[in-house]
Length: 61
Image (spheres, rainbow, N blue to C red):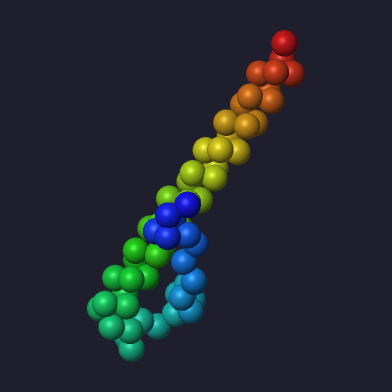
């Protein structure tokens, strides 16, 4: 596993928090972290769906 693939330490983000005091750079970092997490979650969903589909196909026979 590359260092880039390693889980990143979560930032102290709170969904819906006031963003007035947060810099543009930090906002961009948060966007990047959230986009990475969305990709990770979608990959996990795809794995679980593939596993479920394989089990369904096996037991239908």
